Amino acid sequence: MKHFLSIEDVTNYKALVQSALDYKAKPLKDKWLGQNKTMGMIFLNPSMRTRISTQRAARNLGMEVIVFNLDKEGWQLEFEDGAVMTGTKAEHVKEAAAVMGQYFDIIGIRTFPGLINKEEDYSEHYINQFVKYTGVPVVSLESATLHPLQSLADAVTIKELRVSKKPKVVLTWAPHIKALPQAVPNSFAQWMGNWDEVDFVITHPEGYELDKKFTSGSTIEYDQDKALKGADFVYVKNWSSYEKYGQMLNTEPAWMMTNKKLDGTNQAKVMHCLPVRRNLVIADEVLDGSQSIVIQQASNRVWAAQAVLSEILKNN
Ligand code: SN0
Image (cartoon, rainbow, N blue to C red; front, side, top):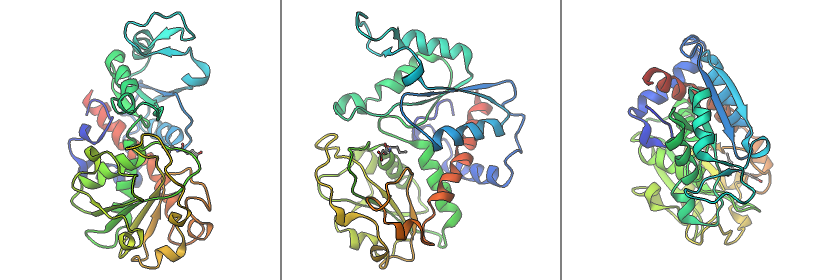
């Protein structure tokens, strides 16, 4: 693995999931692997779990970590080739990324989509510019369209807590008051759709179809109750429309996850990438109940990140 931008960078999916579980059992087994190596974590948007879990992971491998909130503390960056830089942007990504490549052995970067221009967001222009100019391995800390560190942690969590060989996993849309990226559901669909150890179903109101590039081969069921029948894992997440790009078509309060909705499932374990807005996306009774595994899911972010960083350290 050179970069970690999507599932396409993974050579052995099952081995990567297993590696994360091995780190969970023995966090410090490779504590010298990243000795004298420095990871830079660059944020253009807020983060809590990704930031802290990836730092923990890097430290467990003996790396030093520098976090840089580029959005708040850096020069505003220009990403367009050939731009005449007479505006507010003081530095071009060509220099900024190249310089960071001199300081860091691995660079993690978070860049959310603008949710205005579909082509621009789905071209992953920002993270790809970093890959192009930095010269060192790049790890996505959530890009415009994908969140692979989250999805790997999700796969690890499912593998760890499944009670049957091939659990039914349902991704369900939920209401929100803000237009959110499609990155988490795109990425989850991509990882579940490429895993022969789960039955994967996606449910959402009409108009919230995700990019087929990520969902091809997955079952889509518009009736939420039907989709939830017999589910072993229910992944709850809001996203804005891909078709009517970046729009909230409706807020559909009836799609919020409640105990009643879980009745028809196989005592499903409930997942969410967090942060989650209570009693809008998921009801208190679910988050405070015994079926919620969101905390364990978040704790697995460390082991997922550690598996990825160790792969990169071994291969570069
Ligand atoms: C982000 C998202 O992609 O949905 C990050 C998730 C890891 N979530 C949000 O931006 C939530 C913001 C809010 O106001 O609830």
